[in-house]
Length: 94
Image (cartoon, rainbow, N blue to C red; front, side):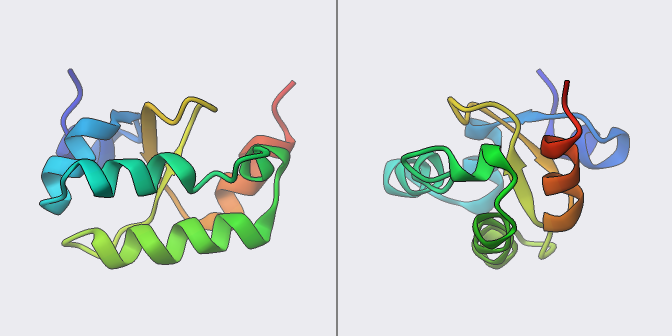
């Protein structure tokens, strides 16, 4: 399993449970994060507005003020990057 430190150093996705541990969260925090992408998947259609919301929320939760984004629509794995990079990544996926 990739740890958050490895994820930050190598740009790898990390499982949401590791982020919850990193942030000192609980099941309520996990549920909130799982909903952040939007019920209709707006985040995965390249919505900068949704991405900025995710960035603000996750930066506030992270001890190093780092923003995290889900890499899949089931929101199990997350990666550390900024909102504009995340949106560009989504829009340029084949």
